Image (tube, rainbow, N blue to C red; front, side, top):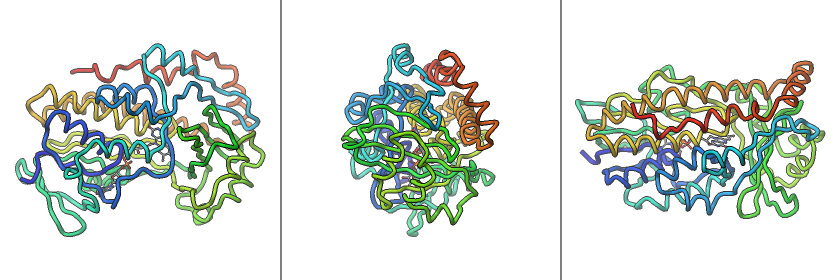
Length: 385
Ligand SMILES: Cc1cc2nc3c(=O)[nH]c(=O)nc-3n(C[C@H](O)[C@H](O)[C@H](O)COP(=O)(O)OP(=O)(O)OC[C@H]3O[C@@H](n4cnc5c(N)ncnc54)[C@H](O)[C@@H]3O)c2cc1C
């Protein structure tokens, strides 16, 4: 055997799992297909629940230094009127954690810096595994192999290893495509985050540390559309020209070379996350659409719960089973709720949009906070079964 644990994938899930295993003195190796551990040039939100998980892993204070504190994140209509205004400050006070946004590259760089270099092997794309008794053999694209006792699959939504384990778990397309970029904030001077629901699609923006702005735009589209594949900033400027400030200005400042384009996909909630000595974590186990900003947050919750279980149980397979009990319902709720929010947010039918916006504007703030409250009111660290 080459290592006790093997982790496949050096994203948020895999890197934080490596840090967690190291903190409980477990023997592991992490394999990443890319030549570098780097997040793409975009940001994401780390909600209070993610900060709670980072706190458990002993990483919260460092992350707060490289994150941008978020106090408001409103949903707006195309003219900039407020549709939904969850009071994130009240929730932060209640749950004793703040919400942050962070640049992915900053987060990946930080997590990577906490892992000894000899524990990460780059340029290693896992293509399959075999199981013999309690030993797992991993096979890589370059013809090499690695033997381990326990396998943590953290290689993202398209995970080839998950699809070997569960052939019916191919990603599903959400019906909308997304562009993202990070730009300089000197001229825009954006100081709060928001998401706008309008007739061309959705546009979200938030400040990041280092005087940067992260933005994303989602448009309804067929899967892998060649039209959208060739889209440039000038196309997006045309689509979003009637949106409130500073959306047209943000787009005008973005360069084509900085655009990141993806169709939005998730996976149908799985029946299991633990398969004897194999565990699925992060997007590999429960990829969700980004509408609740919870994908990476759930990956961090996964790792906190996993390390909690491994720290309390001698038997790793029993720890994997307890992990599944604590994680399955919560991640399923997020995948399904996020899918529903995305469908409503991407409505194009004019009467339906009018009805939706009228109702949303009239909702009391207590109601608009319901989903956030539900997310945060569950102490995911304390569901010990
Ligand atoms: C538009 C958009 C916005 C988002 N916004 C947010 C947000 O605001 N907040 C939030 O919490 N989440 C957000 N997410 C979700 C978040 O990006 C993901 O949930 C998170 O990155 C998942 O981390 P992961 O480590 O599980 O997977 P990944 O980040 O996909 O990492 C998987 C890693 O495995 C590697 N890999 C893949 N296959 C192999 C292989 N065969 N062998 C070896 N290595 C392999 C990859 O190179 C990669 O490094 C957003 C997602 C999108 C698309």
